[in-house]
Length: 190
Image 1: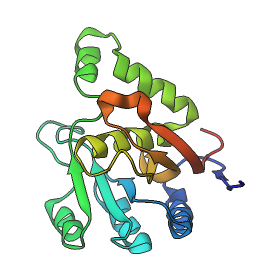
Image 2 (image 1 turned 60 degrees about the vertical axis):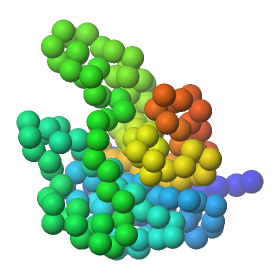
Image 3 (image 1 turned 180 degrees about the horizontal axis):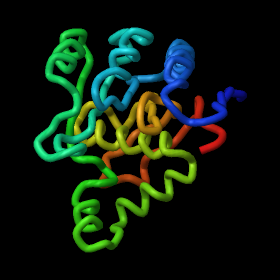
């Protein structure tokens, strides 16, 4: 079997449209239950909705947790969340799989925990790869992804998306059951 992987010269939001188009192509090939996209303020989610539509396969958006940028702040405006949900998109906000309590310990005691070491390891493939895997874990933990169906999960570097993976998600407590099946696109240099 042959599958193509698109490489971008560098990471960043300028790759978003090309990633979404590649994901759209792969979805049309079949056997994808859901598409998972990270979105802080909602721009990437709205662009994904524009390119991919609400489904099928179903579209799942994962946001930063409340308090990520500063205490008591949710980065995605409520109006944007409402627009997405009215179009049938699932929007999940919750603790990051690789940066919850462990990050709090690092910030307070200046020592890394296993979850953040795993995140650093995944970043050797690029920030987008780490994000794509992390949000798939989060969405599975929230019951928005089945762990017996393949999905496409995307990730990015700061804004937009620059990476897309076909994977079989897992719940975070069963992390090592997660399987990356295909790399659809990612930055070559990061």
